[in-house]
Image (cartoon, rainbow, N blue to C red; front, side, top):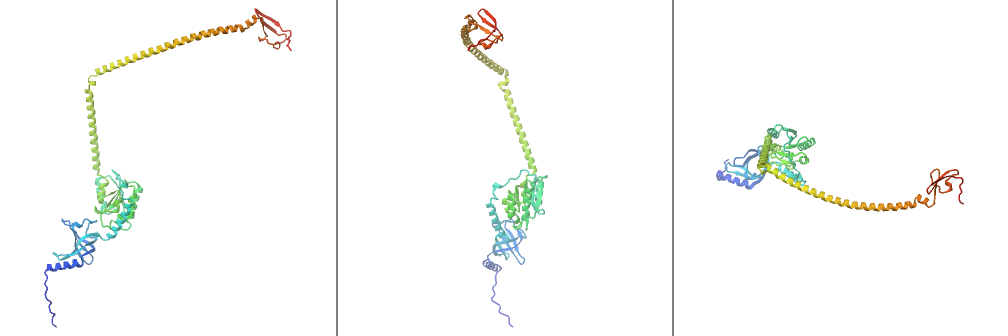
Length: 428
């Protein structure tokens, strides 16, 4: 059996074949979404991000240039499950195919991001993000509550920083799960219990970095509601600086990292001590200036004419006093003369009135005496009448005023006549 005839030979240069493969791949495949696990992640001095995207069957090299990294919401690292959108092409120098990424997001981020935006819009419309409802942190909290995982690196970082900044600060940790099913409910319950207890001054709520799925407990509505109703001021410290959660928007203060939260919640003890020292120095300086001012005022007073020649001042006041005394004496004498003149005038009027009244009284008395003489018993007796009295001294006016045998005394002009009643006759 004879061998088949060899086809016409077509010899490609390596570069030519690579370029043809690049054109075919770019035209036939072009722009795609790929999902896989990151590995060999590196970021050289240029700022570009290089990585390998792999799954159980294969892998592909990739690059995300510096200018396309502004939209990243996480820090890519080995082992993360991501989705990459970009153009599949061939790197001619190495002959390897690769994807030049335009976007990168954590796997599952699409649906989670939509849920995040929907809840954010809802809570913002309710006013839970308003600055007016934000509470201020206490200047010097005595007790700080921390809601986080007791085993993560975040709690160790916070404890180290807080113990350095203020060694005798009282910390109370509420251990909770910070990811997975039930984590959000545990976080919300811990916040509520701290508020019911009421023995802390402020709270830190958070965890270290991770994927969007890892941080999702802090994007749950139950946690946001617990933070919103808290009477205690809360610092939200979730993930890295580029990570934003719903808790960050609702909390009274957002810290870019848990370590930053520990630095924000309290100043170093040395700062307070320095503030007190500065206040002490300012007070001492103010007192010194005040003392100097008083000293200068005292010196000015001591140099004044009043204190240099006190005799002149005494003489001047003495002369003024003498003048006032003279004026008062003159005024008093004038007032006495005026009052004496008024008294004299009143005395003259009074004497005249008394004299007139006395003359009138004498005349009236004389008239009464004349009338009395005319009407008196002696005048009656002189006209031939008599007055008879019974034994009781009563004037007898009618026969019935006496009894038979009663002694009577009858007054007549010149004397009296004594008699005894023999009989009484009554006119009929």
